[in-house]
Length: 456
Ligand code: NAD
Image (cartoon, rainbow, N blue to C red; front, top):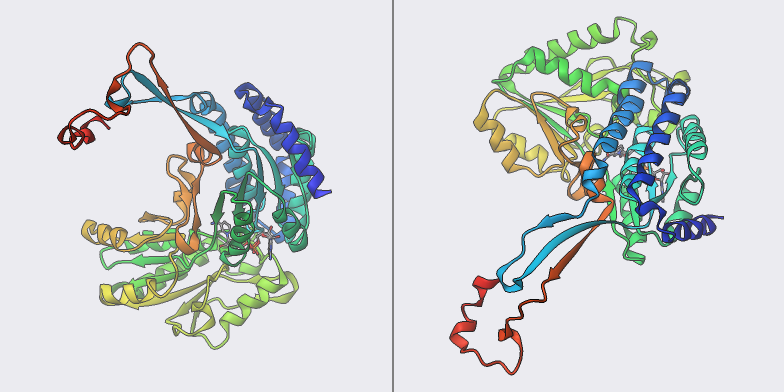
């Protein structure tokens, strides 16, 4: 069944329909209409899956996707035109253009934490660039996956865009096929499996992976505002956000002030009885819930630490100075637990950041420009924000993606269009002049050839 889908999509792609920009625009318009029709159903499914608050479902999933869709619709005509660029002297007379060519059949594999957004956002880019696509949403958020399937089935013929639901076995079967591009969002562990499978067919990939994201609070920071923004970004989606702050590195001088401001903001956001707050999500699966609960064992809990097995609730939790060897500092936390670690010197910061792979996000709270620049230049990471968290993802004018351990490639807005397009370079030569110098028998003096670099 899976190889038939790939075969049908290859035939459809070869039919050249998707090369027409108006066809792509119509496809995106239809998708927009269908998403708007299903917006409440999507929110209900997200609630069923992990009690995602409606505000968060709208703000971080559907509205986010609709905004991306509109942006692409507004710009696709310009992006898809061949771009004229300069030619060099050795080619005189000539013109040069870059054509954006769709790769062909694209596979998109997505995770459970923003199940709608992370299926739709890459799909918009794939369609905009003129590809066909198969989306494999996460099996761990089954209600949302079902709605995604319905929306896509209502909008597109299967040979153009379709959804294949299923778990690891289905994902592996899909990865055995020959794709023209694979876009994967998920853990670094599975990212390696995807990369290996893609290598079999020399298929290009984008890997949107994970990382342990530091959040640095310098002594010059506006601590109260920093705390508010850290709390929002960390406990959104109950901490199940790939770019959430994983741990806070705070200057010793402002540690106490930061901790009390964090506590104050958690209480302000979710009230006294957080387990009954309608604004706080649950952990998506029992496995992740157990994993997070184990992280709390033996730690010095400054705030929270409460949990409820029945509905996989773990409250916003602050941990004081965990040991480097503790479970919470072993790997990406990916839940509502925030370790607070103090530092005195930049050497202390380095010790932490360099002991993990390159993070997906890094946050700097500081009013000291020299310090901000130093951190940005010193460390390699996907992207970040100065004086806020998570918000980098909302700006379509900057690429979103990781580096090293946290991924390969960046997308959103025009970056998505470019990512799903092969850039085909065409040099067009004029016929009215043909300088004979390059042809054998070579007759120009060697010391002239040594000056040839000026012609290239
Ligand atoms: P995951 O890697 O376990 O699964 C992602 C997808 O891969 C799912 O669709 C799953 O069915 C499939 N899959 C799982 N195991 C597989 C295997 N052995 N072979 C083939 N396919 C397999 O990730 P997850 O738990 O769904 O998502 C959470 C992870 O994703 C976190 O690590 C998070 O940081 C990361 N993430 C990254 C981004 C980003 O943009 N960089 C965004 C969201 C989540």
